[in-house]
Image (cartoon, rainbow, N blue to C red; front, side):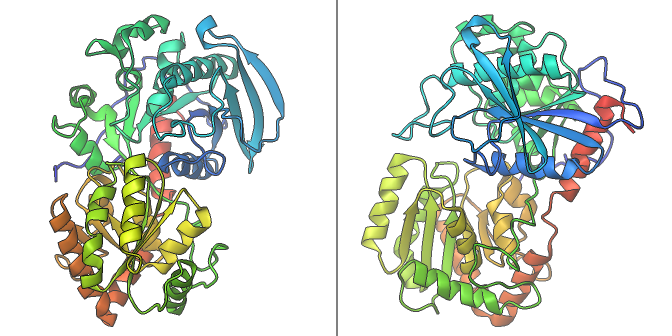
Length: 488
């Protein structure tokens, strides 16, 4: 792994490129316009949705008013408070903003041409919508127009879908850009450069328009979602072509590890579970394995169970997991995979389930209740990612007493300690390489540990006792907010 600590709050930091930070009076609350493509539970494809909801919920209790703005995909069960037309360039309109609230948090849904779709990013064939560039650049232009009206103290942007905002707003307030997945940059044709009002050359990259590159260059602070992924991003081999830009930001670029909502992810009171348990009493964990085996139509529940809840993508190493399936019988273990995404991976998953019905189950799609029951009912949780900016499911798994088996990348490196290498504080098992053989070896080691009742209990309790909440990450974002706005 790459060395160096980029955890926010450790060591000194510098103000980013913004030259006139807003001064916030001591008695005022900081007003943050938080732009995102996803928000749980309204729109959820990946970890961005959980990040948006989790961070907003915590910082609201610390003198921060968060107004969340996201695309109107046409399906949100949303109580409209008011609606307003937005002044945007002709190519981006007409655009409207519907305002309301969700669980006490201000939410604005922005409608632009073509935004309403059944999936935010992918068509029925699992391919990206061919007009994603126009859709999300138009959304960015509309967010800029909304910011001109609402005049927040600070903009918090997320990923390439909103990074274009800084090129469409004439006088931006202080800004933070969080990068959740560096591999998705929104790269499109050079003709889109002409649509930006300001700093259009910052969006030019290798002869194309690159929204994420422009956001990295223009935001006052750039954050990614784990310290190790931040360090990895500074190297040519793992920086997805933007390592030089990130290096150039110096201490204005850092990594803050994501958290999870520990009220939602709580096995002692989870409404999706037929049996509850906690760190002091794990009997319900055994009951959950039996219940999950029955739900998946497997006879018997003594065989240990491996769980996976993931998007079907190359990034997540789903192909690696599927290649371990022939070994499941020899290891005397079962595996369940819940997920959707790449069509070819979906087909292979169905094929594996057909060939190995006693060892493997595949449930296509996303089922929130089943996801919770997989975390609770599985003994091991497999996450063989090729790269992983933060990862949430390994933390959710540990919260539910499922022992993670992971690769040594990004946020997985920051959250899982190998129980063989560190017997006194291990929380899981780590594959030394991103390969089928290394992942299989880590699974074998994990099963040896699991079959020792004493070791199993120790590892499970360590993982369950860790603070995976949003409190610490939110405090580090609050430090950035205060620094950029000069708030106390």
